[in-house]
Image (cartoon, rainbow, N blue to C red; front, top):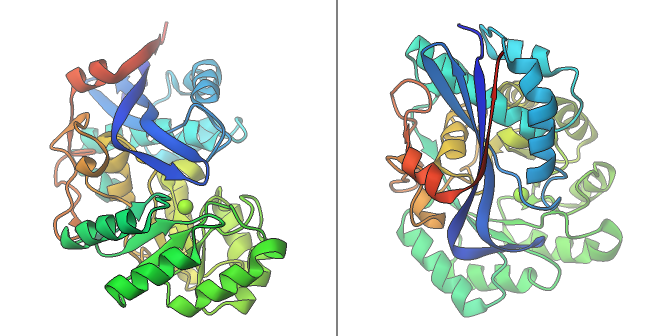
Amino acid sequence: MAGVEEIEYIHVRIPLKTPFETSFGRFTHRESLIVRVRAGDFEGYGEIPVDQGPWYSCETVATALHISLDHISKALLGLEPTGLEDVTAALAGIRGHRMAKAGHEMAIADLLARERGIPLYRLIGGARREVEVGVSIGVIGDARELVRQVSRFLDEGYRRVKIKIKPGWDVEAVKLLRREFGDIPLQVDANASYSYRRHREVLLELDGYGLLMIEQPFHYDDLAEHAAMQRELKTPICLDESVKGLQDAMAAIEMGSCRVINVKPCRVGGLLETKAINDYAKGRGVPIWIGGMLESGIGRAHLVAAATLDNVGYPCDISSSSRYFEEDVVEPPWTAEKGIMRPLERPGIGVEVLEEGLRRYCVRRYVVRRW
Ligand SMILES: [Mg+2]
């Protein structure tokens, strides 16, 4: 491949159709940094789905811009990668900042796949042609509205329902859904809002509802309390925030802190690390699934590719673009049909990025070039 000549960062702010609430707060827009890398006749797209503040992740729009402009771009300009390993090696001197690194690695993955004329999922060794997807519902706090939303998503064919919980909105919500919808595939995500000491009883109670999994109940860095809780639960614990890379995944699995891992490629540093976790977990009999961060259609393309990996054993959090956005920045928008999404059989991410869409939502744009 020709050397990387130019990297462009487009900070976008895309309005959400309806506000999304988690234990971190209520969001009306998706902030993101779109990364566009150019080399020779090709370009590739990645996304760094950071928030304005350090909520889900310690990385923010400002930290991602700083690390990208001052460090990552310097390490990548002029690089002639022949595979994603070369990107990892070039960025090895930069500690942490995995989301910022992942956005660049994904852009180069797209570029490499386009150059080779193959779909992105094949570049990373994906094994499936279709991906089962589920829907994630924020903390609603209103029983009737929750039932209305779940009913609509089940009608749309989503393969499982995940609801966000936080102390005070948990057992009652689950009980309600079991009463209304019976034995649907259902799971909950606490986004680290509980503690073993204060909420053990709540989790033991949730254990009686046949949930597919309970996601990240405890601290975002914890493995020990999750291991203690997992020993007391029939329901698998799924770790999300606690797994920031392969090392964490290995520790979590070996300590018995979880029986499932939600891998967000941006959280673990990219597609290669996602594959490494996929392979390690597979060897230990622990399934993974791919989670999302309300990415635009660009980040979503990378999620779909990751979800084709062979150890993905549950429906993934990758819903249709129309679930969150009036208009996506890609064409065609990502659409799940009867709970199935398919990677496009076209080079790279497969979707066309709409310049007009990027411009419409652009807050600021930065370009760095090789001299
Ligand atoms: Mg989660």
